[in-house]
Image (cartoon, rainbow, N blue to C red):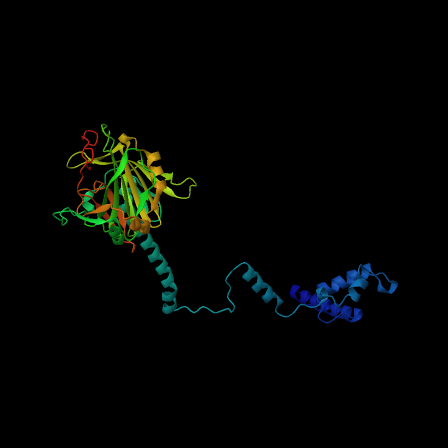
Length: 399
């Protein structure tokens, strides 16, 4: 007898014995060999005739209505799979689609990858161009300090290149005789309410008020107002320029002064610390025709914004006008009551200036950003202060 014949005979005998055992024990027809082996093992261990039952046998028979012992519903595995994918936020394919390969499908599938690659290349080029364009600025040092939404300073490590800036026009039309108007008429020309300080240093008196309309101040919304307080103590000459100037204007967009890196610092304006201001120590001074330096210890300035109005308050440190004094002046600024002035009949008059000869900030560099987002850089062309330490003081003169 061959091996194959022996195996066939053994399988036929095993099938016959399984059928006989299933019929003998009364087992269902769908029982497998493993199920029958388990049934034989249970029969060897327990005997229902002798009331030898498996543990919890009766409880299980009496608890047939428990959902745990009920047959599972159809499609439970699919619902469980969908619930797991949904909880893990995974994408899944509902229907199995047989892939069809063609030139069109290959072209369409490669389009998103090519778009992502093109976007990445564009971002890398943009970053490279940005580094190349702004590298010198970052290398030279750049820092912005804000004193309000529209006011502040732009700190640089050296005098900026004026060739790329727009210069203030020097040939502005001037009048043969300065125009003068009353304070009420000047208020009608302004887009904001005039402010005056309630506190002023001893022996400093308001000597002049200017309304600037002619200088190229496209960064200001309307004219700018300037109040000049001069040192008037008889018999004593001031060590510096002997003047405190308060300039106020309404900006167009953002207006920043360009100062030396490290020359400006943020300070608290009021006692409660609700408003921020910037104190600037020094100013740009022309050394020769081609170079400028930042001189410390001469001019002192407070820059801040209040109710949409930018205030520039300047003094001379050689006259002991330091940060503390300027903050006291700034904290005392208050809007003028024009109705009271009209009733009293105030005789203060305002000089309307059409040029920058008397503008105290003519040697400053102003960076302006228009409201629409475009940048506009303005630089004064008249650097009138060449050596403030050696310049003689004129009692009521201007810089």
